[in-house]
Structures are given as structure tokens and as C-alpha cells.
Amino acid sequence: MANLAPVLVVFYLLPFFVPVLSSDFDPLLDVEQNYDRNITTTINPNCPQNECVNFTLIHVQQQGRTDVLHHLWTMENIPTFFYARTEINTELIIDWHKMLSGNNSQAISFSKEPQYFAAVLILKFFMYNDLNDTGIIPKMNSYDTVSFSTKKMFWELKSSNYSGNRSASVAFRLANYDGVELDSSSNIEITLTAYGTRGRSPILPHLAFTENSTQIDFIFDRLETKESFTNARLAIELATVVSEPNSRFTLNVSQSLDDEYTPGVFKLMEVHSALNQHWIQWRPVCYTSTKRDIGDSTGMYQTGIRNVTDDDVFENSLLQWLLLDIDMPSLSMNGFNVSFGVEGDGFYKASNYTAWTMVTGHGSPIGDQFSVMVILVMAIGLGLPAVVLILGGVAIALRNHRNSKDDLLLSD
Image 1: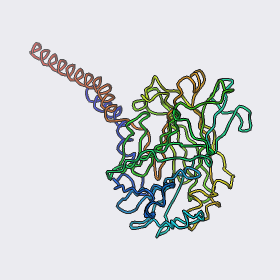
Image 2: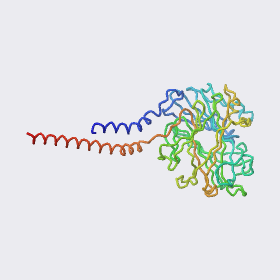
Image 3: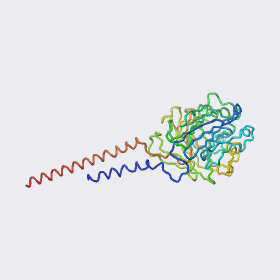
């Protein structure tokens, strides 16, 4: 029994350590992974002074050892968050005369053709009347649904923070919709953050980010809902496109190992491209107060992946402004909706506040894995009984050995 105890310890503890030791190794991935990147950020790079007052294009470079990720973020016409992986020393080139004259088609290019690129777009916001309290969006042509095209929205840069070389963050606020100013007490805000290393967001749901990713935070604060919508909820239509030809995206739902980072939430949602080189990840939870606490949260739903066939998506958007070897409209664009709230939570009016976070990136995302603390707790929980078993076995062996010696002395 004493000899069997160490084998039992190894048998029980080995499965918990193996995933952690091997989770970051993927020899088939081209993008540089698990190495810190230096970040540099510019707003409207090389734009003539005072000519870009009403235009905002953010350029974030994540410089690695063997490649560079160029992020282009803009809220002009259709909010688009684009990235391209290029060789070292590849420059972004912008023809600002074309951009600002309105003839901005193919006004943005790179000095060397990107090795890979992808983008996430925000196409529409929805408000819907959830009459049956299901949390599910009705059909788009329903009287109980109102859609707001992002093409009619004007956003202003609220804040930016990129003083260091390890992260870059910018926040945009919706200023008006179709020429009508947003009420001063209402706020729709989108914050984008890129990191140069791996870690977890400091705010719930503490999503994991990589040196090849962007975190996107949405806030809907004190919005005025349609008067006839007694059970109003909010939703977003997102779309994504990659340079992989004929790429079909897949939605995966994985069950988390524990809820250490996001209390009460055990699921992780992930949309990824056919070659697993581009991904979007989130937890099915949104928060109903600025505290972002488990007591101030509710669930959410997402639709399945579908083709986006609207050619207007490319018209006068960042995707049309880019000059690349691939014809953008020829690429397959996929989309899906996410809606905020579930049955029984009191609808949007219960808090007049909704915050949601997602992460999108290149390469492989960080999957769920046990933290060092959880591993220690499990090791102690499983190890203590094993230690007791070993000590007990040793004690029994010693006692039996002593008894056998006493028996021999008595027999003499």
C-alpha cells in the first residue's frame, strides 16, 4: 500500500499540470505568439495639420521580433476594426488628399503586401420589444424591432491613452444619429484596447487577451427607449471578414473549467475562421451597473453565423479605402447578432445601463485553464489525502516490522 501511494499522487495531479504546460505551443501557427510586442500609436498619421479635425483614424502598431500587426480603427461611416500582419519595416501609406476629398477609395495601402488581414465591423444597433420576455430578438421586419444603421452615426473621440509601449486604448462616444444630437444624459461608448503582452482584463468578465488581440468594450447608459416598447432590450449586429478565401466562420460554445475569473459564468463563446487564424471571444454575460459585479449582471444571447450579402457594407467604409491585392467585395463576410438580457431580469429599464466586453485577435486565443492558485488548491486537496495515505502506510509497515521482530525475540 505504501508503494502504491506515490503512483496515486502522480496519477491524480498530472492531468492538471499538462494542459498548463503545453497550452501555448502550436508549431503550425505562422503568427508570432507568446512574445511581448512593442506598441506605438498615432491618430491620423501624417495628416496635414488642422485638416483632419472631423476625421479620426487610429493606427496601432504591435511590433514583434519577426512581424508587425497594424491595427486601423475608425468609427467613420461604419465602425471598423481592421488589422494586418506584415513583415518588419512595412509602412502604412495614406493619401490624405484622396481621403479628405471624398474620393477615398484605395487611399490606404502598405509598402509591402500584408501576409494576413481581418476586420470586425459594427453594422447596426437594435432596440426591440421583448413582449414574451424571452431575451431573443424578433424577426428584423417585426413591428417590435427598430434598427439603427451605424452609417448614420457620428462618433467623437472621447479619450485616448497610449503613453507607454505596452498598451493603447481609445474611447469613442456617439455624438449624433442621422443629424440629431444624442441627449446629454445618454451615452453609447465604445472603447478599444490593444496590449503588447498576455494577460487578463482588469474588469469583469476578465477576458484573456494576447499580444495579437484587441479588446472591445460597449457601454449603453441611460438610453431613451421607444415609448411603446414597454419591454425594451438592446442588441448589436456584428460582421467579420478575413483574407482567407471562401472562409466560413464557426461558433463554438465551450464549458469553462471553473468560474474563477468570471463568477457565475461557466461558458465561453468563440467565433473563429476556417483556418483558425482569426477569432472573436466573449462570455455570455453583460453588466447592469458600472460596478460590474456578479449581483449586477445578466445573461445574453447570440444568433447563429450567417452570410452578409449587403454590398453597401463595403461602400465608403474602411474596407473600400484599402488598396490590397485581394478584391475586398469578393471575400466572404459573416455576421451574427448579440442581444443583452434574459428572461426575468426586468429588461433594459431595470437599470438603464448595459456593459459588454469582447476580444478579437489573430492566431490562437487563450483557452480556459486553471490558474496557479486553483492548481495549488487542487494539489493540496488531492495531495493531503495522498500524504496521509503514505504516512499511514509507512506507520503500518513500521508497526508490522516491529511486531515481527518482537515475535522473533519471543520465539527465541
